[in-house]
Image 1 (cartoon, one colour):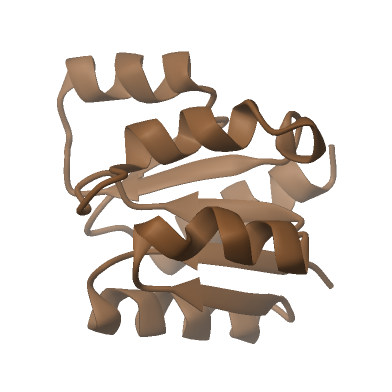
Image 2 (spheres, rainbow, N blue to C red; image 1 turned 30 degrees about the vertical axis):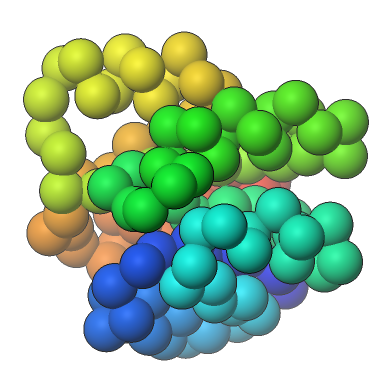
Length: 121
């Protein structure tokens, strides 16, 4: 199906997300260091991104802006997957270019339906 890059500094969380994506038939690309995400994205050309927000530099907000500033990823779906459940974080994330926002903990079906819906548009 699709190559989906998971950028998450928590290794256990990233492995769980990768397993969920693989179960749906997607190919996960796991990046645990956000500073390497742009280089890996430019080398692998993912079809979508799952980004955590609370990471060492660049954080998920900045990484989302960096992806949107790259012509190849201007319209690539970006889903924020984070523990931040406040309105300000949502506003900043959508302002940075995110397509959707999922709060941890989440139901697997919620995440996979959002991923599949964005990939089909």
